[in-house]
Image 1 (cartoon, helix red, strand yellow):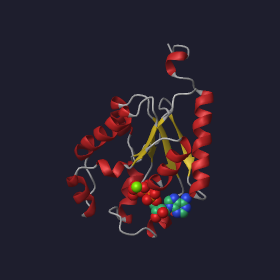
Image 2: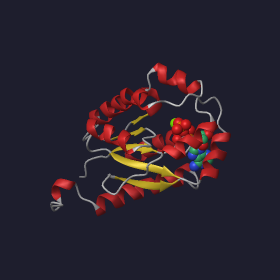
Image 3: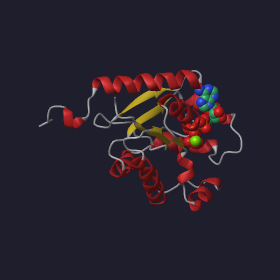
Image 4: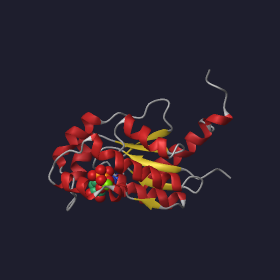
Length: 181
Ligand SMILES: Nc1ncnc2c1ncn2[C@@H]1O[C@H](COP(=O)(O)OP(=O)(O)OP(=O)(O)O)[C@@H](O)[C@H]1O
Ligand SMILES: [Mg+2]
């Protein structure tokens, strides 16, 4: 049997990480952890005030998420984390080398509209601009898939499961493949 994935659901604010993450975890039969819950209080206060986090604020957060992901290695799990920059994903991989990223991607207008319906959340819509400016999509050497967020949460989740299955079929673990050089 295939080793269960440890998935990081990534993407800009409002793209559906908190919505899709638990559904994906259910489908995979593994636990879900909400990335926002790993933020130190100081980060939540900053975001509530509309102050973008600096990278120095993010390292302890990413390390905490990475520690959770590492603890799920071989067992499987899904955790949300916007992971917009390559360097953030490198930090997560440093803690949990086998993580797979599911990048929720979508039309800016659709995401903005969905965010507009959301209440009582600490991320103001205005921060979406900086989110898109910061976003560095997955690169060719990063293990992961991009999944479009058009449609219902169930449709998106099914798309993510299929993409992960496709990833397994296309790319066996690196140590089993031919050496790149
Ligand atoms: N497929 C969907 N169809 C309709 N509404 C959706 C869908 N996915 C998410 N939403 C809604 O869009 C809003 C943003 O989704 P969600 O909170 O899951 O995004 P997020 O990526 O976790 O955002 P953040 O980075 O700010 O935590 C929520 O109000 C959610 O209910
Ligand atoms: Mg969220």
